[in-house]
Image (cartoon, rainbow, N blue to C red; front, side, top):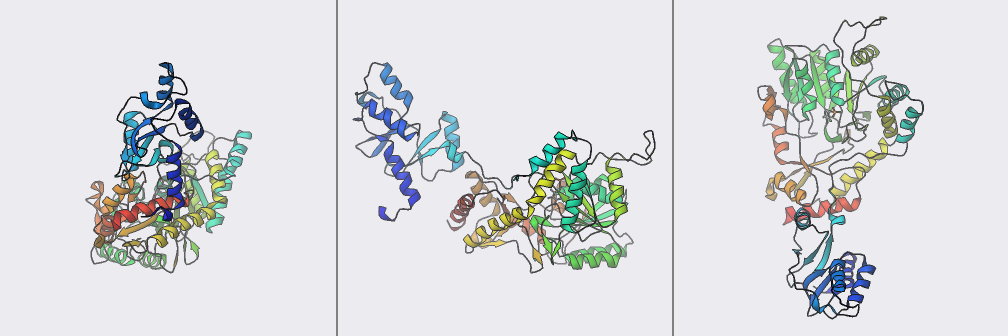
Length: 501
Ligand SMILES: *Cc1c(COP(=O)(O)O)cnc(C)c1O
């Protein structure tokens, strides 16, 4: 192909290579000046003016001078050594492995003809793109500093009260309790609903283990419910089958935990109606869907209790933390009581029930207040990342997690399935991305497939298991709100190359 069609990016790389190319007739002085000017840390010695021979570092030039050569001596006396080079199909991970193995920071990339096309710099390639990283705003520090200034590091305190009020207002619930994690919030929700040994609790199967583990903390038995195709969240049909079966044997669950995955609400109206019909309270695990809406109303506000998580990978974070929300003042007051060691109102330490140490600190609540002020920006940024993926990869056999007309998804994670017709498995795509230092993950492995829950009952909507298929074909792509679009484009390139060959 002719050079005139080269992109500016490629042209820049070629110019850069030219600037650091020397021959045996270059002088030591000229080479030193080039090294100094290019600030590249190395020069490329070529023979016959074209093919690569070896790299030259300032150490090599210093040794020539120490051996008595003058600045006007030519590079003829540089020993011929075999420099490490890579070819242009090298993966970032392999290139880094070579750099580590040989203790070097640069690697020339040569083409089939032995011409250097580019020099890889450790600083450029040693940066992993992660799935979802914390993204702080400008005001977190102010709230935290206020806590320091007033020496209100712990316990509880004004930031906790304010964070609870602000989050409750934001989602449109009347009461909230800030706690140490989303898992703690789910645990408290189950305790408040009276879940105890021998009970059953229904829970979405396609989720993170933290949705279900608190059921077992209470000595109760989880029963897992399949997803539907339209939202990837709990299938109303599967829930109806499970509730009907439970009623038949006189063993209705103490609660139903509905999870809203990857920034998208479950189809709440039919799920709420079913729970009402069978008289079972609903807990919404909205750990991944803060900022999302169902028919215009905030995700996490449809159950008797809702929970959010502020773990480091969530859409906003307090490094670790969670929130329990409800319109029932008594429930939230009881949650706060249980979460602070269940101390009875007495002058001495008196306890009538078992308590927990589950509250959020005043420092972390300060971080949360700051994060809440940028939540909408974070939602917009994550949605923009998703839009970029979707528009650039519309023709390669990727099916995006659907966003039904009743849903406003935050796209906390861009999730998709790979069409089996592409011949590329999700596992292969994830590996190809990992080789380019890009962290992608499979979709959650359903709970009914987990060794620890293998004995538990599982209900589909009647047909084949949807969550099994989503796990088999699903991939979550890096989706951080602080990602650069250039990073998204880099990921898109790798996906295209992997799927379209
Ligand atoms: C993160 C998460 C949790 C747990 O929240 P933590 O704050 O990490 O304890 C629960 N459920 C789901 C679906 C989650 O993604």
